[in-house]
Image (cartoon, rainbow, N blue to C red; front, side):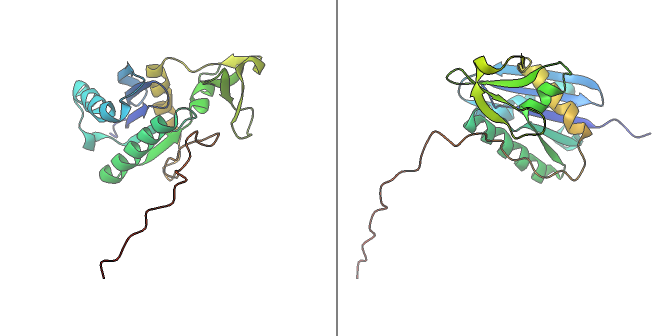
Length: 192
């Protein structure tokens, strides 16, 4: 008898650390911690706690699902880098899941919509690339569920993805707010 796959999914693309552990269709553990900062320091301990609560070890996992955005640039990089490192060390597939796809998986009518700063929102209509628009222009927004449910949806989508899916990559809709320094590098003097 083949056991049902164990899927760990997590997301830090907004002001949270959220994760869910599924065995087949059953949610074993789902947790969220709301935080504006500190996801990089908290994510791995949170995942370890979830596995321990379920009586699972890292080597028991069959697949990882990870939120790739759109959302907070730093948060997205935290999750994607963590997921890629875990997949490499565990030798299991990692599947990137967009928040917009997770919203769509709820089956609700409307436009998947991820709130963004300054009264803006990330949306995706049809197969077009996601875009940033004023949230007031979205007639029928469907917002993300609570973060624990979002992680659960990501896990459910990850289990359905093909085994040979490409490694997850951040889903950036707009360029970063920060720019590289414009100062010239210092001149290195030779002691000779």
